[in-house]
Length: 371
Image (tube, rainbow, N blue to C red):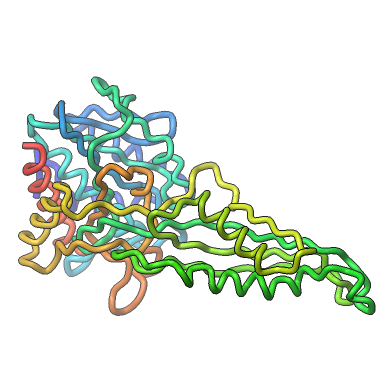
C-alpha cells in the first residue's frame, strides 16, 4: 500500500536503522521530514510530541504510537519478507502502518490526527502532556476516539491492565539481639506484610476481560547488623491492576491491609514510586464502540479471518492516558511468538506483509468511521 509515493515498508526499513533508544531526535526529524514531504504540516510540541491533523468536524480520531525503543540495539536485517531490528515491531512497524493510514486519509466527515510520542518506554512524558488544542482550528484538548499502535498481531485490543509500583515501609525499634523483646522487629513484621500481599485480592472478582489483578513483592531490604533487632524493613511491590481500581485507591487499600496484618507497635507506610508522570492505569473500552467494530472487521477482511479478534492487550500502554474515550490498541508484530520474546528482545522482528495489512485495515476502518 502506498499514497503519493509513501510506502510504509520503505519508511519502516529506514526507520529501524535509526537508533532511538537513548535519543529520539534523529527519528523524530525523519518522521517530521516524511510528513512534510507528503503534504502534511507537522508540529512538535513542548513535550516532543509530533502532531499533524487532517479534515474537520466530528468525530475526531487520533492515531498514536511512540518512536522511542529499548536498549541494547538489535542488528538490522531484512530477509524473506521479515525486517529484524530494535524497534521493528515495538513500535516502528505500527508507526509505519499508522503513518500510511494518516497520509492516505482524505475524508471530509471528520478529523484525523497523528500524535507520535517520544517517551513511552520510560515515563510517557509525551502522552501525559498531550494537548490536541495546540493544533490549528482545534479547541478541545482530547479527541473522540484513539488508536494506539502496538504489536497486537492485527487483533484489536480493547483493554489492558495498569501498572503501579511502590514500597511498603515497616518501622520498628532497634535493640540488642540478645534482648529481642526490648525492641520492635520490622523484619519479623514482614511475615504479616507478605501474607497481606498474598491475600490482597482474595475477595476481589476478576475482570471479565483482563482476569485477576496481580500483586507481586519484588524487592526486600531490612536490617543493618546481624546482632541487632532491625528497626526498618522495605518491601517493593509490582501491581498489575484491572478496572475500576486507581493508583490512589490501590495505595490506600494496600496500606490498610498491611497495617491490619502486622503487630500494633510496627509502623506501616506505603509510598508509590516517584515518577514525573501518572502511572499507567488499567482501561477497558466497550467492544460495541464503532472504532472497535470497524477496525475488527477490517483486520478480519485483510487477513482472511486470521486476525481481527477483539481481546485484551497483555502489556501496559499509553492508551490508559486517553481513556475513558473509546481507545483500542492495534498494530503489526507480536510481543512474543512460539519461540519466545520478540518485543524488547534480541530477536525483535516484524513481517512486511503484516505491516502492509495493518495499513490497509486502518485505512478501511477510518474510511468507515470518518467518510
